Length: 374
Image (cartoon, rainbow, N blue to C red; front, side):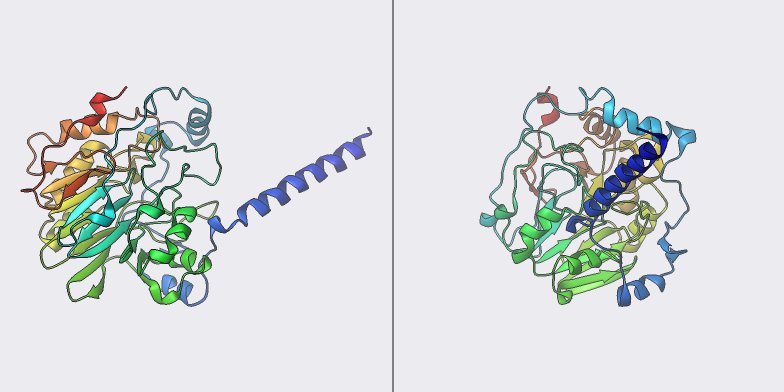
């Protein structure tokens, strides 16, 4: 083989790989970038500058001065010791029949990671559902812990509100969304995220898509507020093409705050002051690393955020299903338990699928279930 043949052949191989990569990213789960009227709304947002969304305070997604660089982090993630990242036995769970719940009870069921089913004021609300075995478009990355996929779309009753906090794979899961499609009555999401749903064939009339600090009044007795978080977005190479958020779910009787993903910041105190406290905070607690500390809280910061927002109860999320960071799978629970000592809120630690009441007087003491696992 002469040099020219080698070069031409090499270029041909690269072309095939590039073509395959292009076809791979054309799969529907990648979605499409916002366009038209939606893009115009985004461009009018004070949080959208230079073609992307920005945090309230500028932060680095990856701060190499505080930890390992991107290359080292990726090598460790793909090839490092994973023996401590996931449990050595099937996850403990208590599967609640969601169809048989008393519609008058205000309750929440943790479905693993950051997925929650909630009944509030008679409304059925589903938050960031992921029922797939992988939090990734690639089958061998971010595999769910054995036994953590207790629920499927078939287990869900009709959903009054589907709330999606941002477009990352571990929060917006295409197979789950498509399986839920016939059951979803309304969708609430931050700016730009609606493009995924329209691209996947959802009717535009179902979408309620707003900027930070907007109130979406779905009924006289149910408001959902889109709230700031300190995070980022994107499903592939384009950074921050859509907004990310937390949510406040408000009825005449209850207030529930879901942090979404994000680092600790002054926005928590501002949210607490705005709403005068919450009955329950569903708080990010897991997948942290000092290298990306600005966009994921440490457990001690999650505890402080619960204090800042005036939560009566804290139910930790973003752990118990996927290993997206290098800490042991039990560590977020161990640290949040310690950090919650002497705090004014009650820490709720239900197993996946167990029922928790949004009323501190009704909850029994939950076991420290992770201590009963290897």
